[in-house]
Image (cartoon, rainbow, N blue to C red; front, side):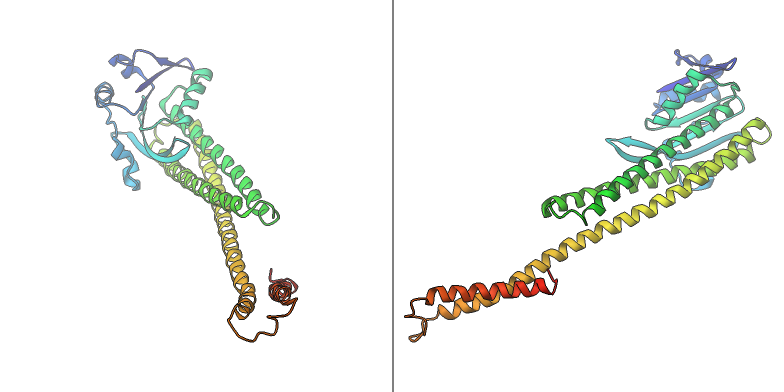
Length: 327
């Protein structure tokens, strides 16, 4: 799908006739979302620029993500795509020349959609392709900040629920096990999301100084200050992402600690049950033997006496365990 935008007199307008080669040549921004081969060919013929493939924008080495050919910048970085509320990484490409910007993405992006809405509503005082690109990067960083803030809130919720297990004794073992399983799954989801956010931040941190260096001859001077601010924002968000990663590891250790405590409690109960059960079984075994002479055999209270001894042999170890605070 092609989204084509023109900039004139500080206003941004969407081109409805995207099949026109003239519209593509005059466009300030061509946004290609999951483009077909025919769309790639038409944009290439109209602009004369190489359109990166999905394999090219998925490369991880810096030399493949940052390149300049014929005074045109070819940039790529990973973005975050959500499928069924699960985050996944997907590559995105940016082709920046003095006349236009071409973006290639292979999955829907909320940050792109929100930025397009903002451009159409507020316009762009400086309608250059570089201004569009820097504004897009700022929108992407704002999106990463929102994700990190949501992760912080989720971690706080998990922290409160996890450490409440140490105070709540009426939840029940079954419900506690279910909550611990759910907590592990949620921590795994947040950890995966955090890693994708860090990849996007690292990609932006590489691109910003590259644009400053390679486009210094023709990029607007006001964008240099915005790029500096962008780099500072990326640095602060990277530090915050590191803090969240440490907190995730702490909560993961705490969750595994409660699981170990629950397992130890089960083993302790089994050990106590086996110890408490030995004396009654021994006494019952003695009185169940077929001896000819058993003093209590003809005693009127022999049956009650044997039951009393069996019960006391179980109660006395339990009382001793409680007195020693083993249970």
